[in-house]
Structure formats: structure tokens, C-alpha cells
Length: 202
Image (cartoon, rainbow, N blue to C red; front, side, top):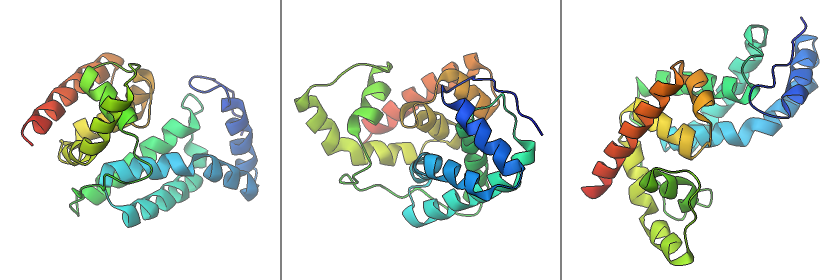
């Protein structure tokens, strides 16, 4: 099977497609390259969605296993990372039907950057800088922010995380969630409002 490059999302999409073609030809080492490249992104998504470190590792492993088994269904109009996000979110949603993941994060967690989460959520923008004093305030309140994200409705939680933590574009989010870009913007706006409301009650 030959995959034509669409270059929809990432400049290195060519490289991913080459690896996928090799995988489809029976080269398992090529898939190891993709796992190494995207394992942190998948794990981070699972961790932010579930708040559970151990389960996030399991989810990440299951995501790559499912991706490997489904490579014949891969659509090159998606970036490989967006396809992985879609698979990962489906696994998470399946698990959430059976278990409560609303577990608060530690404010000292080394992967959490208050600027990457709090600044765009509070401002409604995506590129505003914060000074050191503001950064310290956000660091002190990061536990409340993540706790509030954890109790958002799933549709709001995932769109906040995809946009402000995974840094996906509106277009990418629309492809992952199967909704139009305008719907992405509306849902994100409503999610920000509800998140601010939750934080205001803490």
C-alpha cells in the first residue's frame, strides 16, 4: 500500500509516512521509531485526562498497540500524532465509563508548566507572556487549576487539554473530535467559561 503525503499538520509528516509504509511492509523497527517519537505526547494526554499515573502508562501502551494493529486503516489526511490522539481519547473514554479518574495533581509535578495551562485559559488568548511574579502565583495555584479541569464534563476537559496543553490547532482538534472548526471554537469558549466558574468557587 502506498501512502501519499498530505502534509496537513507537521513539516516532518513525510518521515512519519515513510515509517508507516515500512511498518505496513513488515518492518517492526520502523514502528519503534514512531513509538519513541510520540510516546511522551500520548502519555501526557492520558495523564491530563485521567489524573492517574499508572493507568496513563497502560493507556499509552494500549494506544500504540491499537495503532499498530490498525495501521492498515490509517488515513494519511491525518497527521500520525492526531490519529494517535484520536485512538488514545477513545481508549480513555472507554475506561472512564468504568472508573472515576477525578484525582488531583501534585503542584510539584515536574511536567506541569503553569504558563502552558493557566495563561491561555485565563486570558482567552494563546500567546501572552507572564512575568516571574505572575508565574509564581500560577505555580502556587496549579493544583486548583488541574483539579478544576478534572471535574469538567468530558467534552470540555478534552478540548481544554487538546488546545492548551497538547497545543493542537483548531483544525487538528476538529479532526480528532470529528467536529467543525467553528464548533471547536464555541466549545472551547464554553469550556473556558465553565473552568473559570469552577475556579472562582474554590
